[in-house]
Image 1 (cartoon, rainbow, N blue to C red):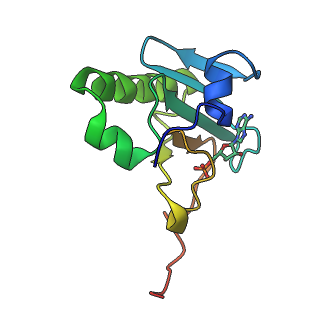
Image 2 (image 1 turned 180 degrees about the horizontal axis):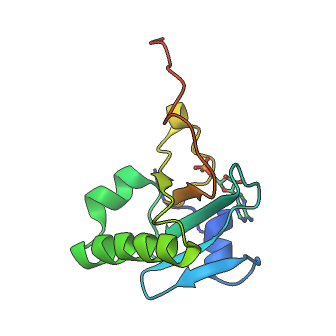
Length: 123
Ligand code: AMP
């Protein structure tokens, strides 16, 4: 799947759309989700053009991968959720309901989050 530069997160990175920024460095930008599903719900996106976790893990250079995950960890520290705990999640493709085709991880926290997923039966 080719990267589409008109996706919402690309527009946020270019400054064409606003965001509530939590953290930014050379590798990543972290900002609050517009439709939070937990008391804290923040998205971390790489600055490079990657469609998905699959694309990022297969094609990003090692420094981009390391920089991205360091930025995700730093974001959680800045949110103050390391001690209380947090969840990091990436949706990849249709079965996971990925809505925005620019790789991102969600950070959830600020309250007990329950089990990781309700059990799903095979189709
Ligand atoms: P996903 O299903 O993993 O692709 O999640 C996409 C996320 O992006 C959803 O949780 C949306 O609420 C969030 N989102 C969509 N547009 C914006 C926006 N302009 N600013 C912040 N978050 C957004």
